[in-house]
Amino acid sequence: MNIDLLKNVPVQRPAQGLAIVRTAVALILIVHPIHGMMDPAGMRSFGEGLSADGFPLGIALPWLIVALQFTGCLGLVFNRVVVLSCIFNLVVLIVGVFYIHISSGWFVVGAGRNGVEYSLLLIACLSGMMWAYWPRKQQ
Image (cartoon, rainbow, N blue to C red; front, side, top):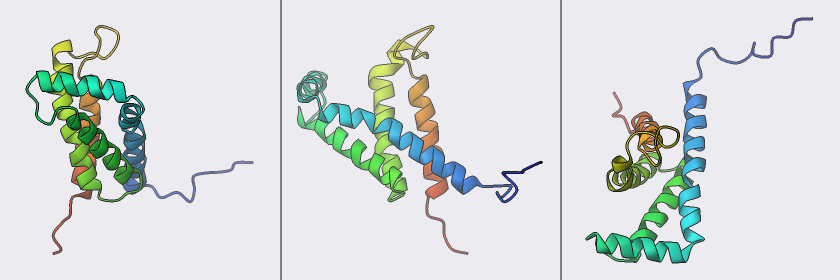
């Protein structure tokens, strides 16, 4: 008995693949703002560190970052304002790469620690999603 479980599945299904990546990236990223919201002392400390490095807004800045990232992740999960959600998360990740990770090199684990590889993968995923969802002119 030969049962072909995939006989009714379309050969090409880029929309479903993109939805999987969009949802997975959102669920992976949303852990960061949730952690921040659950650790007010850490947020205060992070804000003080940012202020000491010359960033504006003091303690309010990390809370703004957390709010934008959380909102952006929800937008991705629910397939709403995807381009704007990607932009929010891209800004956070790109600044994080240059502010925190680049000095640690490439590797997150193994040959190094806290490097850029994971962030760059997320940046690539978000950039691809933004490209796919970017509004096109009607022809």
